[in-house]
Each structure stands twice: as C-alpha cells, then as structure tokens.
Length: 360
Image (cartoon, rainbow, N blue to C red; front, side):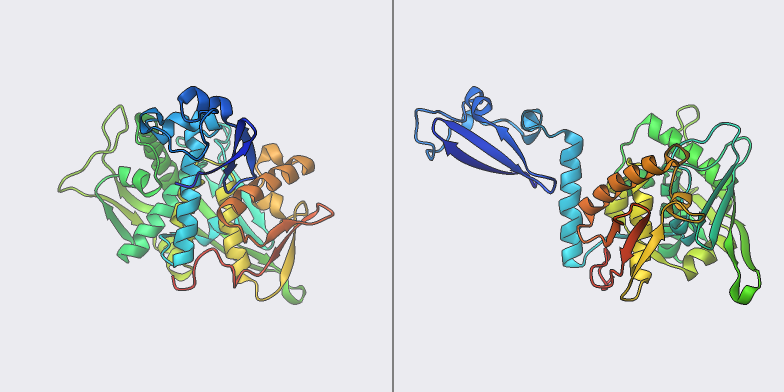
C-alpha cells in the first residue's frame, strides 16, 4: 500500500497531502474527516481517534481522496516493480526482436486491411494478415510475449499448458467472457499471420538485402467452450502450440528479457508497452554514448511506433511525450527525452540504470 497521508493543522482546519509517485496534490480533508467522525476540531488533534468511526476499508475512501481503483492498482504495481528491481528479484518474460524493433498495430485495422508495415532505420517489418481473421493488433502482442516466454522456459518448440486462461493470470488480466473471446480470436490472428522481417543496407555503395519470412506457429491445439470462447482445462489432452522453427530460432538466438510486471501494468495502455520495451533494448545496446533518433524522417520513430491517427507531427510528438511520462512512472531513470527542437528522441546508454538487473 503506497498511499501516504501527512496531516497538517492550520487553526481549526486540517489538510492532507497525498504523496504518491505522481505529482503532489493537496486535498482539503477537514470536512471529509469531520463527516466521518475522524476529526474533532474541539479536541486535541493528537488524541487517538475511535476505531469505530474509521472507514471499513481503503476502497471506501478512494473516491473521497480522488483515487480510483484503477489508479490504486497502478500505484501498487509501481511499488512492486521498484521493489523487485531494487532487490534484483524481477519476474522476467521474453519478447521477439522483430516486434521490439517494429510494433504491431495498436488498434484494430480496417476490415479490408491485411498488410501492416513498420520501419526502424535499416530494419523493416511487414505483417500479412489472413483475410478471414485479419491482422494481429492490440493485446495480441501479449500472446507473442507469453508463448515466447513459455518456449524458452520449457526449452522446446512445442509449448504445453493447461488452459489459455493462464495467460490472463500471467498478465494479471480480468477473466470474463469478453477477455476469453479476445484470446481465442487473438490466437487465430497470430496463427494465420505471415511475417517478413529484415534489413536493407548499402555498405560501400552496394545494396545488401537480408530478409526472412516466417510465421509464428506451425500448429496449435486449444480448448474453448463453444459459443462463449472460455478456455477450459483440457484434462489429459493438453493445450499445445508448435512454434515454427524460424520463430523459435529467432527468440532463442536473440533473447530479449522484459519485465513481466511492467508489461502487465501497461497491458491496457496502447503504445506505452512498445515504447518501454524498445527503450529498454535500445538504451542497453548503446555503449556509453547517446544517440538522436529522428521522429519524422523515413525510418524514424513515427514509422516504427506511430499509429496512423498520430502520424501528423504535432499529434505524434504530443502522444510521445505522454508515453514517456507513463514510462518514467515505472522507470524513473528512463534515459530518453525529446530534443529541444522537437525533431528527435535523445536516448543515452542505460548500462548503469538498466530496467532489468544484471543479475537476471
């Protein structure tokens, strides 16, 4: 619990300052506490209050102090993440390099859209969706992270698990019919997608193409309740997914660790997880120097992360600033800032302030 209340007396009034990991906000509590019987202006302020008049739970005073349940959950996640990081006891997941360098769509693409292209410097990513299921988007990226993590933990292309609902537990997501249907549809989109990934470079004036084509899975066997899409425990017949050889080799040869709790906390915030994961990787790959990542040139950050609706310069710059604030909430030492001219993101090396402890 990370809600700290400090009371100050000013004559006959009392004020409380909410100290959180966000900007300080001051609330007037005299009326609120008086109504609840917590403060008695005629009594000595330091006298103990009667327990019978205290709120029955923290949840009951959240609306009073201006904190929603969602924000309280976020504050608890921030505290947990920072404690794990300080103690070197982080819970790690793993992601695939192509989707660190170039992001999947943030929101559902138009129905007739079956191609998604992103560029990051000399790297490019193209995802071709199936006409029936469409392109992977949004929280479908969590499926790729979860399956990659299971594959590396189990050290096998064949991933086995009791229920697809385990993914919801892994990312602390609610379990309801809507989520279950999204999982089922997401697995279909991931399974049916084809990925093109590689580089186009011109060393010494010669064009060199290094391209690869792969898909996520060769085969999948999942059990769901018909109609509701709810995953079921398959009993003796395990749920299983066979990763394609190319995808398994990619995640095995380029193991990129990510903080599970951060990904879980940001799962419902479009765009921020992609920026966080990319910054973690990029800042670690730099050796004692800083770089300017152009925002708007070809292959710049807008081509890598920017959704179509934010492709206009001022909108993307504003959105990027919001994303950076969210990232710093979970990673205060985040080594990135928007340049003074607003045309680039300046990233410095984070070898000493890496989000993931070196002992991991």
